[in-house]
Length: 245
Image (tube, rainbow, N blue to C red):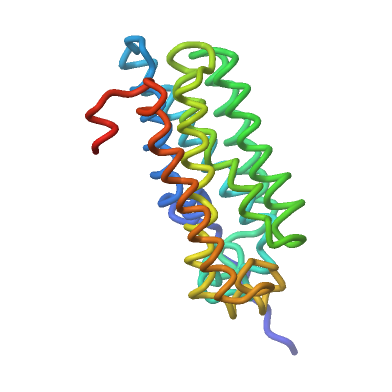
């Protein structure tokens, strides 16, 4: 007689927290806060906290949906094999429901408590990360992180829009700064885990073009990023302290 197989234990709060990619969320919250603080208006502390909370929840939703879709390749890669889904601590429907629910809640709360423009940009950022980067680009082209990196550059726009109700030149330059920072950041990581990406069939630049070409592209984007960082001061949108910092 075959012994009964015990059902897996349900995921606990730490597994749901891991789905949100807390370290990535920290960066998203920081850049969103920068956009809000740079806005030329005074933000009510309660509304400001609510807006940042919505940005954090939206980022967490995008991370959860990313892990739901990529659970197959996460199982292959050593860096991600211990995440809740590939490690068997959670099933995929639970991750999907959590991600969709968290994303919908963050956008609705932003729209009701803050304003519609901020909610709209938040919704676009979540959908861009999940549909454009995760589903469409990541497994198809080595330019995945170049185009898909735009998803992580939206928070300064969201923070500014939450404070002002519109978008201006300065938050667009902040968007450009994060956008141009993203490829060299990810390619530097990919150089160290090239074999993981190759095993998972993800065409990251080091896998398809080699280390030398990747380092060249990192250099190019670093120069462009530096120019974007100086642009607010050069255009008179930031003071001398920022320019010399």
